[in-house]
Amino acid sequence: MKKGKVIPLSEPCLCGHEWRNVKECLDTGWVSSVGSYVERFESDVARYTGRKYAVACASGTAALHTALMAAGVGEGDEVIMPSLTFAAPAFAVRYTGAWPVFVDVEPRHWQIDVQKTADFLSRQCKVSRKGVFNRRTKRNIKAIIPVHLLGHPVDMAPLMELAGRLGLVVIEDAAESIGSQYRGRNTGFAADIACFSFNGNKIITCGGGGMLATNDPKIAARSRHLTTQARADAVEYIHDAIGYNYRLTNVQAAIGVAQMEKLDEFVEKKRAIAKRYDEGLRGLEGLVLPQEASWARSTFWLYTVLVNAKKYGMDSRVLMKKLSGAGIQSRPLWRPLHLQKIFKGCTSFQITEAVRLYKEALSLPSSKTLGRAGQSRVIGIIKNNGRI
Ligand SMILES: Cc1ncc(COP(=O)(O)O)c(C=O)c1O
Image 1 (cartoon, rainbow, N blue to C red):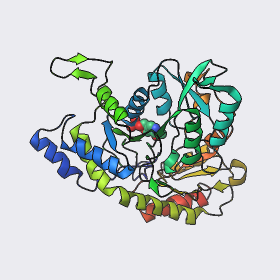
Image 2 (cartoon, helix red, strand yellow):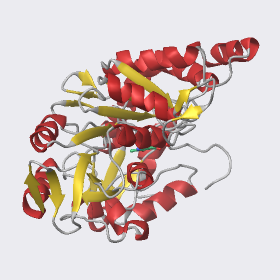
Image 3 (cartoon, rainbow, N blue to C red):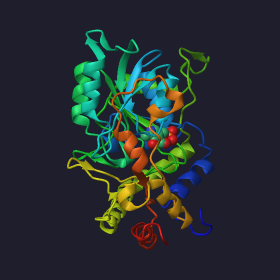
């Protein structure tokens, strides 16, 4: 990467009340996992996503792990998810002793392929009153984790219908999608539980942090219990389960509260960036631009294009290197999980699109702070086949 002014892929924008809120925590001594900002952050996210309850967690991965435990997923169970995703949902499944089952993404919006998921369930599983049984592994499938990839929502209605019919729990991985909308509502409202991440590269951040949201009071209470060391008696230190120190601190929540105030503005900025990329790159031979479904309002968390090596004249990795040489950060999508050694032996079903997208996709600088001049530079270099 060229020294000097770098155009980052996705940097945070701490331009609101973050300093003021953090200072208040430091001045008052409320720096740990109890405090008014934790409560406010929880209620802000619950309100935003239309949920009754939200439980702040130390990270999005911790939220996913907690959600799985609270939903009763455990040793020897299986959980369906797309192969094309950051690995956190698969890791969280393994923490519980359960196993991931990988399915494909659909070619238009690159989200979990609901039709192929249904095909897998009907062709390779036995469905009975006792549940859904994977014939190959002889394990029970308990849940599905749809991941709203890159800020574009999954088509949740058919997925919820499928899961409802088979009695499967659905945990939305909304780590990349807070602020995006599905059929006019903010993502994170549709499934049994939704999980968010506030990692530094996400649309809003609190340094590191996560949240789970649900309408189920039992799941909310169980999650709160598990994330605070499962203390049945806080005075006598009696624990009734294996607990976790997964709580978010008040200092992080203070940043999160300030970021929530900015969320709608950030979404507009991201959408404006996406529009400028669309206008600048449309019609360029060998490049496929991201599509927004008619029922979706994407945040374009990371604006991602597909590079057809033959037509464009170079593949996504070569273009990435050329951009890097010009001080511009870009990155491919995640190596599909079914191809990773650590998940060898896990079930995967008819995965083709995830592999193609992995080869062709390149995410371009998408920070809220990206100015017109910087973005024009990125567009200019891509139009000029990587030449500065
Ligand atoms: C889809 C997805 N799920 C889960 C996570 C995990 O979140 P965290 O980094 O906060 O643990 C991330 C991102 O980091 C993500 O992109």
